[in-house]
Structures are given as structure tokens and as C-alpha cells.
Length: 75
View 1 (cartoon, rainbow, N blue to C red):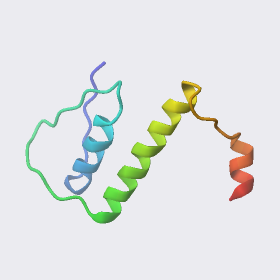
View 2 (view 1 turned 180 degrees about the vertical axis):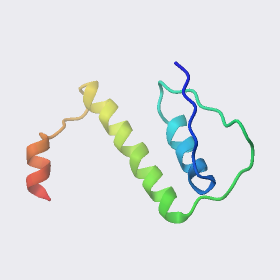
View 3 (view 1 turned 180 degrees about the horizontal axis):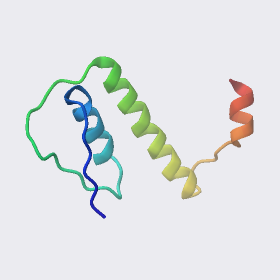
View 4 (view 1 turned 60 degrees about the vertical axis):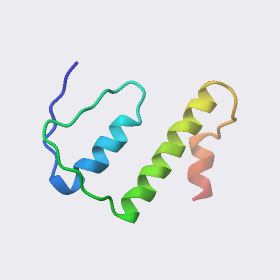
């Protein structure tokens, strides 16, 4: 399935980076123009990448997850 997204210029790089880190998505920009990502956005993106890696390891049985209820109780 193809999906066209209309993303604000200041968020486009972040969304493209996020989409490209999903193994089941192939994304390419229609227009070019590379902008720098803020340190905050880089941290959020790196945290999301780590979460996806951990999710894959849990699904493979290589890492033990915790129940959502336990996670919420820890907050």
C-alpha cells in the first residue's frame, strides 16, 4: 500500500528517519532538502530505535519483557 503524507518541513526529517527504521516500511521523500535535527529530536529518535530493537528481541525470546500493568505501576 502506498500512503502520501503531508508533513511540516520542520518535522519531515524526523518522520523520515523514524519510518526508515521500521523494517516493514520503505520511505523516500518526494522533495529534497536536508535539515539538521535538533538534539532533542535525535534523542527521541534514538530512544525509539532502542525500543524497537528491544521489542524485536522480546518477540524472539532473547529478552524478557514486563507486563504493561507492572510498567505503569513503576511510573
